[in-house]
Length: 458
Image 1 (tube, rainbow, N blue to C red):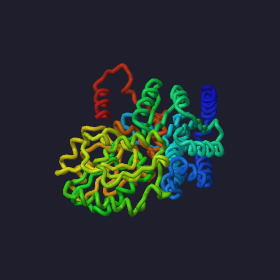
Image 2 (cartoon, rainbow, N blue to C red):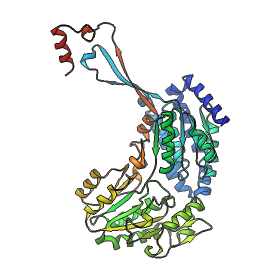
Image 3 (cartoon, rainbow, N blue to C red):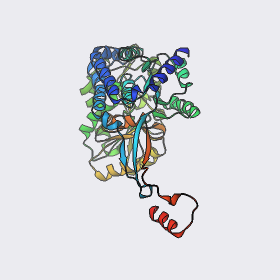
């Protein structure tokens, strides 16, 4: 508690100097972070392998490379993002100039999860620093090797008065949430997100929540099944299924169910080999608690083929379940693991009620060649974001915001959306001293004044 208090006092004092408001300073700090991350690529890969069994290629593709891409994007666009934007001034305020000016919140807290520990810590940090804030970063205790690398990167790049990393578990989380930050950015589970929101409400603190949920993947009878299977297997079993936007379950037309399941099984073998558990590029479950939880969701009688696991290595092979219903245990919570349930429907209209009756998902995927089906699903179901005829790639760009809705989160980040998430946009009118229209002042007399007011305000 004492250390956290000292860090916050130092950061508030540093923020008050105005140094972080200088765009050139922000760019310099982002360049420093870019250099450090690029130099620590092997350290990052080793840490991610220790915590999650990730291969070096997956580590770069899904974490290191995306961080560097976000930094590059921010450096390129920051002068534009940070500048004031002129807006139209109503005639009633003539003569005047109106504009919006983005300003940093101040000292922000970034709390990140364990499944993409580097990406989901450093990418929001990039956005926070680009917006001109100081930051306290709290990585997950469930990924200890990654937390140590994050701490080392931050301490090599920045003084604590600017960016500080606090490690630890629940005690440290609680101590941080008890403090009044100027803004909090949280990525994690819905249950913890609700607690974060309660704490923020008590302090009237702005918050962005990036949560999760059961993201459906809809496959109709017009889909290209071989390509759908290839892309579903990639998105579902990446990081051993521990991806917040992974397809959680499939809804498919009953007419193509057997063909789709067959194509998925072939793709699993093609992408991960005959024995995925022995594949060094196939990851592992983060810890025993989550391993046991995932196994507890599986109905062995509905598994297609054999359920293969390695308790010692904390590995569960990619697993497909068929003839699943919404009443099955596997459908009671977000799976967050390498298990893919398949639910069949007879008519596309059947999918809307069960999806709409449940919490809004973070992502939704549609595999179809029917533009009417695509349009109907896209326009009538609320979800954070998604893809048509692919999975998860919508989050791998700085050109679009990424975020949830309802139970799957609030607020968005990446690129400009990230800059705006960590900024307050001031609305300012600069009024001329030359002319002062008298019609707004009392006493309110005269028909001419009434006519002028009605003329200007219509």
